[in-house]
Image (cartoon, rainbow, N blue to C red):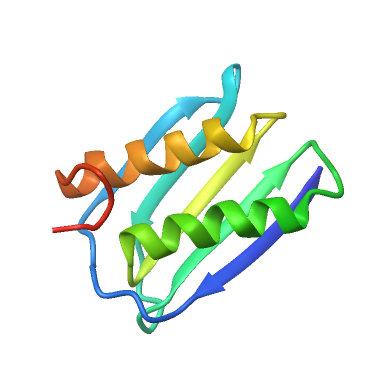
Length: 107
C-alpha cells in the first residue's frame, strides 16, 4: 500500500459531522470526510494499492478542493484501484451528503 498526503489552504466552507461513502469491496473506493481543527486547511490522506499515481491523485483532489473550498476538513480515502472518475464522484457524494449542497461549492 502507498500512502499519499495532500494539504490545501484557502478553503471557505466548514462542515459539521462526518460522512462515509463507498465501500472498498464495491467500487474499490471508500471516502470518509470529517470536520477537524486544521487551522483552516483541507487535508487529504490516501491509502492506495496502486503505486506511482501520485500526480494523478494530486490533480483529482486539487480539483475537488477547488470545487468545494472546504476548510478544517480531513478526507481519508481507501483505494483498491478506482478510476479517477470514481474517485471524483465519491468525493463529491461525501461533500454533498454532509453539506446538503449539490454540484460543488458548500453552502
